[in-house]
Image (cartoon, rainbow, N blue to C red; front, side, top):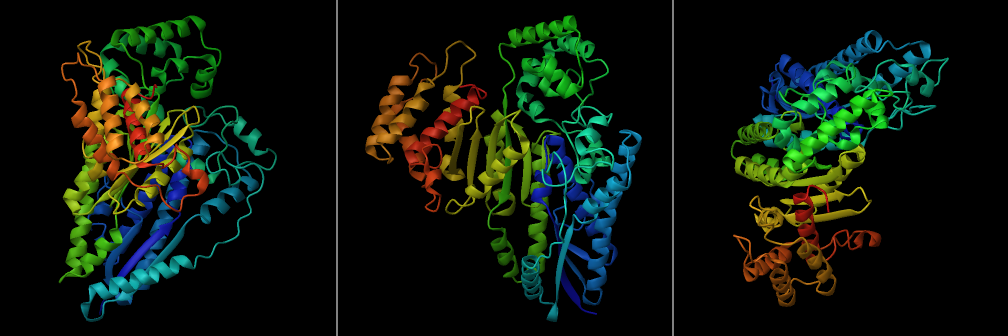
Length: 587
């Protein structure tokens, strides 16, 4: 018997994850993909296959995120059987998840079904997954040749997709916006979902959220019981940590106000509830009805809760910041990495080594990200929600660890958005930013999209080595000192640099002189760590010189001053972002 290399994958992936209105949808969608990939990997192993990517123990580790692409050494004579069993296992796992969702829908949500409902459910659940696989025989045990042939066959297979026609009539669901929402013959989707008894946090009341079969599975399958933080909780995390010792009175007031409508979302002794309740604007009749199903709250209890929260604000002299970040980080040139492995004397051992390194990096991500904030970390790809203050430091740290572990580089896309901004739009911004970072020459870059609630949108990029520690240190200059000395640098500096950039578009001697003048004008000479204008002017000019030029193929309308403009304007936007982050999204 001879061996073969099998490559197995499935789709959709990104679009499936992106169909989300809340962070828990994002997380459950990601974990469904992990469970499907894990089931396929176990089936390959059960047929005697030896997983090369991911590492062979990944399918058996419940805390590991298995990627949706599997590479294995299998018996050539059992290739068809192995691939078929992997596909059957994947579909079987999906059916198990769907059945667990149906049980919850029937027993807990008490939904009504009929032939029309069943037809929609079957059509949407049975036609969702597309499975692809390709294999090549290992002639003379030549791993490199077999892998290249299997990879080329997989690429060809993906380019020849066959899509079954789908007829999605009527009112569409709230998550994807393109599939028919579940309903019965005698009730349209709006009336049907208005009649469903389950309330927040699983479903917005009064029919304002309508689910198709896929959305219903995300909201009610067994994976949906795993707690995941909302975008509001992520945004308020820095505040919660500072306010924890002072929250007892406010917690008691909230529990009295929302008795019967409040569920813990995380394990925390002082504050186990959603972070949106740390924002004063949540404590209104409309928001409490919409988010918690509490109609006509007791006015006295509401006033007591609002007074208790204001007291917390006064005690720590701050309030929760409204912005958070989505960080998408991905390894650069992974195809070239694999090609380098295939060129080594023992290509299979080299590929396995890379697989172990990627597994080690994923474990590093899990150790550095707070529980409930990590959406996915598998292979060279990760997606995480972070408080605004932690986004760039975390992305930079993980990019450094990726280089240390694998010897390669990683690029990141970061979307900074208001905690009430549509999640699907913020996620798309993060993915777009990631792609734009990878378009920087030599990659190893970061791109940040700032989605301000005013409608203004800023897009900026930098290579990691060009930024180094400059961004972190310039941000610290805008930070107010605890000893009442104020900040070392006034906020106007950032905005005046941005203004000067329109007259001085090149990071030359003239621009450096203007930087020095502005630094002298806006520095705080009374600060115990007063900055040196000449040193910082040179440092900022050096960073500006290394910032990417605007992409030549961007549409003309995208070349507006707020999107990939001159290097000096890019520097100005980075400085404004530093101040924006220090202020917690308050300009």
